[in-house]
Image 1 (tube, protein in one colour):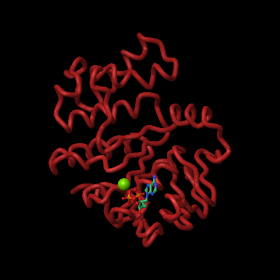
Image 2 (image 1 turned 60 degrees about the vertical axis):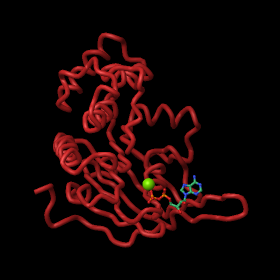
Image 3 (image 1 turned 90 degrees about the horizontal axis):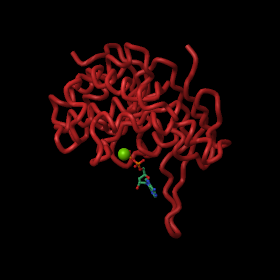
Amino acid sequence: MTAIIECQNVSRTYQVGSSKVEALRNVTLSVERGAFLAITGPSGGGKSTLLHLLGAVDSPSAGRVLINGRDTSEMSEAESTRFRLNNIGFVFQRFYLMQTLTASENIELPMSEAGVGKKERRARAMELLQYVGLAGRASHRPAQLSGGEQQRVAVARALANNPSLILADEPTGELDESTGLDLLELFSRLNRDGATLVFVSHDPLVARAAREVVALRNGQISSSGAKATSGLT
Ligand code: ADP
Ligand code: MG
C-alpha cells in the first residue's frame, strides 16, 4: 500500500499573547490508502489540531505534512483551497449545512465550486443521497431533518467531488448512541468501498468501528497499532 498522508516530526505551537501552547509535539504518522484510522485521546490532546494539518487547513510549526506526496507548507492559499476541494472531504461535529439550502443543494455546493455543471451536479447529489439512505429527503432543508439525517447529508456533501480522503472531527459528537452507530455503519461501508478515512474522536464507538487506532495525549502519540478485531459487533 502507498501512504496517502505522511506526517514527519510534526509540531504545532500556538502563540496566544505572550504564552505558547505546544498542541502537537514531534508527531510522526502515516496513513495508508484505504485505511480507517481513529485518532483518540482526551480533550485538549491535540486531535483537532492534527486533523487540520492532515487536511491542509493549517501548516505545522516544524516538520512536514505530505498529502498525496505534496508538501502542504509549499502550497499557496489558493492552491491549498483547490487541493482540498478536489482531494479531501470534511465532516464536522456540528454538520455545518447551509440552513437556507435543501439537502440536494448542500451536496451540490462543493461541486458547483469545482465547476461541475448543474445537470451533472443534481444527478450526482441524487446518487449520493441514495447512497447515504436519504433518497426521499432531497428537498428538505436542514431544519426539516433529524440530527442523524443532517450528518448523512454532510457525509454526502463530503463525498461530492470524489475525494481520496475523508476527514472527520467528532462526527458522532451531536448524535445519540444508536444514531451514531448507524452513521458509523455508513462510514464502514464507505471504507469497504475504497475510501480512506481518518477520524478524530473521544467516542469509544468511533475507535471500535475503525481498523487502526492512534492515541494522542498532550500533543504526542502515546500508542498506536492495528486492532486484532475491527467493526462494530
Ligand atoms: P482536541 O481536539 O484533542 O480537544 P485541540 O487540538 O483542539 O485538542 O487543542 C490542543 C491544545 O491546543 C489545547 O490546549 C488548546 O487549548 C490549544 N489550541 C487549539 N487551538 C488553538 C488556537 N487556535 N489557538 C491557541 N491554542 C489553541
Ligand atoms: Mg477537538
